[in-house]
Image 1: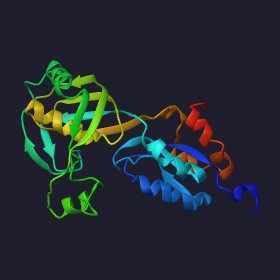
Image 2: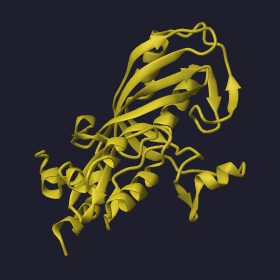
Image 3: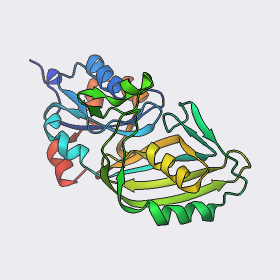
Image 4: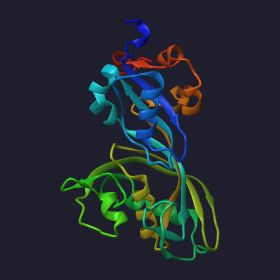
Amino acid sequence: MSELTIDPDGILPVDKPVGMPSHVIVTTLRRKFGFVKVGHGGTLDPDATGLLLILLGKGTKISDKVMGGDKTYTGTIRFGAATTTQDRLGDITEEHDTGHLTEADIIAAIQRDFVGDLFQKPPMYSAVKIAGQPLYKLAVRGEECEREERFIHIYKFTITAFRPDPVRAEADFEVRCTKGTYIRTLAHDLGQALGVGAHLCALRRTASGKVTLQYATPFADLLEMPRVAVEHRVIPCMNYLEGSF
């Protein structure tokens, strides 16, 4: 067996494009480069972009450690409308004017209710399973069920820009949080707290654990590379665990 047919062991940071599910990234890399053991260290919604950690070879054995890392995101919240999916892809469920909304209002609501230890209810449009059934399958049938709230921690939630508008005000943000935090739900709940409704209209993951977006290669670029070049971008398992990369 040649060296190139042996899976590298470690983590491959990928910059995921918009519109592509995380599992498609995994499947495409497996087929394109002949990797045998491939997984990911924490999914991203199809509409989100940014850092997706692909686990290769023995890297799949440390998936719990990879998934357990804190996450950092940037994105945009659109106020004035709540949606079924809590993002821009869903149907609008309620609408409100936002002419009165100010950046100070948003910051005050965040500081009051959305920083520190929180309990968050997973959205219906998610892969969380209830009695073995993914919630999103119930949601597409128009069904809703009780979901147990999950403990999360928001280390940082800052507004980086605000664009006032009478109908659809928008705010850019940065969030650093623990694993399992749904940023869509954070946007939705913030809109409810402000009484105007809101949904997520853009999301980009910029860090996962100690790995930041600067280590990631755009997915389209990876597909143009020979396998040996892709292997050179893999962070070995021990380096990842020690944070020496």
